[in-house]
Image 1 (cartoon, rainbow, N blue to C red):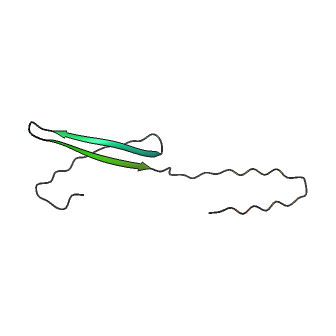
Image 2 (image 1 turned 90 degrees about the vertical axis):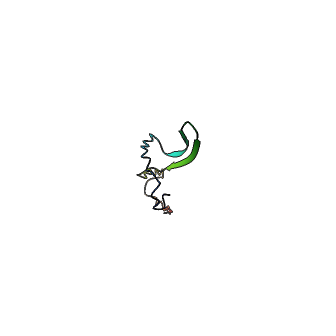
Image 3 (image 1 turned 30 degrees about the vertical axis):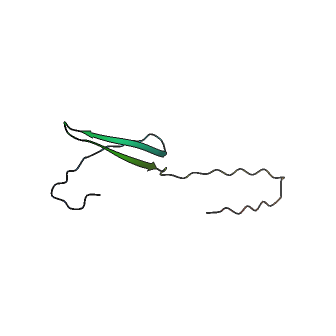
Length: 69
């Protein structure tokens, strides 16, 4: 969180996960007189939700199944 400070600097980071999940990472910044370690956590969710329902029932019988949303 950069709070409009004139001495702040942006550090662009590109994160391209292949799978959904929780990724824990460290960003290490080093200089000749300082070392800073930033721990970040990225949570990736899937974009599309897909479900499949399969019912087996005798012929001419009614099947009722409530589907929670």
